[in-house]
Image (cartoon, rainbow over all chains, first blue to last red):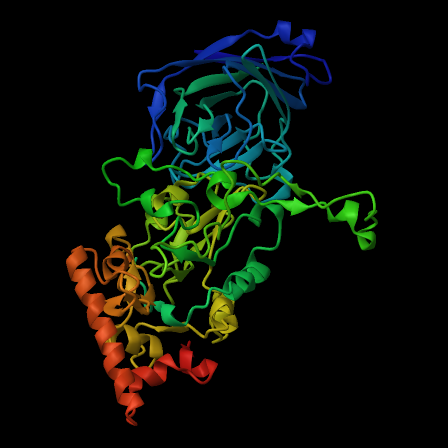
Length: 208
Length: 345
């Protein structure tokens, strides 16, 4: 399965209702790899599948990701004992596959982590399970977004300059193909967080 | 990871007067920095028998529940810790620009209702009926356990035990607020800061310890109940109370974490018989104390009760020595004259 980031001349696409999105092909990604952490409450079955609608466009300078997925209620608060919904996209820093679970020591990954209670999505780097951290340099925390929840669907647009802001970001170059994987957390009481999540397999992301 | 040294504390419950000065000392020193800390009392003083803080923490379990860790509840702020309410001073106090004639002080969020709670909600309630009612105070900080379940529970290694002194800390940059540590700690002595989205806990005043000063709760204590010292310092008062005189016990050793905060169990006045005469039975039942205090994980409640009777006998025998004009190392330690007598760090 391949996701194509189409080239458009529009300056921006910060609104999911923007007609420019109709030009982008929609890819439905299956998330069916269940991770679980000791101590977390298993609120969903191991064989569960979730589906995320993905559209990607770019204008040569900025790249825009539009994600849509069903969520019966918007879980936004992060407090005892509730956790918010969350979503992440992961891209290896180096060519080829990295281990799906947060990469590895010499196969690091770049993650964009969105959560509705955060002011902005986080640029995260990881080199294996339990090593993920928001990149410390301010330059790489440059990810903008828009989010809305209506009719039981989250619509999230994540935007970033295509050129890496620092060594803690992957650069998106026209004509290149990248590996990408997605993760989803369903919020609620003592619900999914951290390693307790559902993820997709690696997919190809082709930049037109 | 084994530590090179382990710092320990002993609290002599016979001298605790329940004034909460330790709690306030800690609060003003460490948890008065943002709204996310309002519900946190790294040091709290609870009345025993009682519900404790957070509410009923003793029955909520921790990481020792190996068979089903997913069922360990996470406390809630309002019902578990107590709503961190604040008054509308700005509306009422003229010094804050308010109008005293028009307004009344109103707490917000409203702390009334059936689920209302606070860190010392059932203070002095205790148990028993007059004239044999009883209670005692139990000051609690993080136990800086030898086998800390918060460290085990964290999937990110954000919680760690310092090699140099065994103090358990949370790396605020690594923590991502998953609250597994809150579930893991059976003493519920690790808290979540909703503003900073990270776990926070008693740091055993490590910046003070590094300057060879006692913890703030210990140095501010009106009753001078605390003793602080390293486990390998055989000259320290803490060592002598725990290892030499063996009069200090752990809180809930059955939680399998090996706490490094110890307690000298409280003596109590004799109970009255129904005819009004004084009996030889202590008013606080030893069986109740045995449910709280012991040496090791494997002890039975009967063995714990025997140990508590043994401690009471030891203290009484040493008191008798002093009362008859003799001297006693134990009583000298228990009646410290200066901070240096209690704190050897």
